[in-house]
Length: 174
Image (cartoon, rainbow, N blue to C red):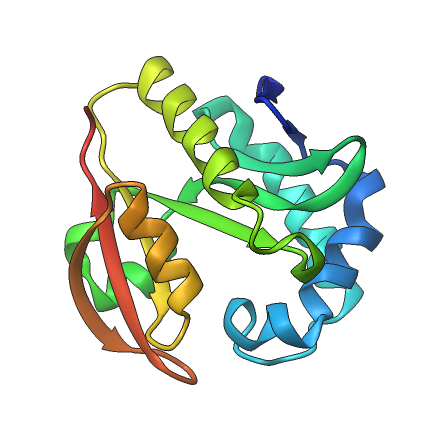
């Protein structure tokens, strides 16, 4: 199981079955699904499958964590293997791990995404140094682009996405 991470304001603990409904509620929120889910209303089973798949990644030091503020679910953050779809667009990413971050809209603008991503990246580079991290965001998602650039990710290139042009980024290990 992934270790729980504690920051100044957050508790980041592995997603579990108790998070399914709050995860699903966040993913179907119009503001979140616009970029996170290509504006598709995903079925609840997607959240169930995400939690189940997450459990299998812990042995590799990967997986998603719930972002909690004073016990309240605020979003998800974590690292997972680059998908086959992504590797098809950018073959150089095939063996990399990819950052995932999503916050419930009422928590936006408070610096919590940056705080949670920084904690996950620090833990990853401490525990498993030497591998770069990749990230992808949609071109119009200025918040995500700004977050990645603030955290030191470098623009790698663009490729066609489902709804928008996608922008790929990399972060080399320190």
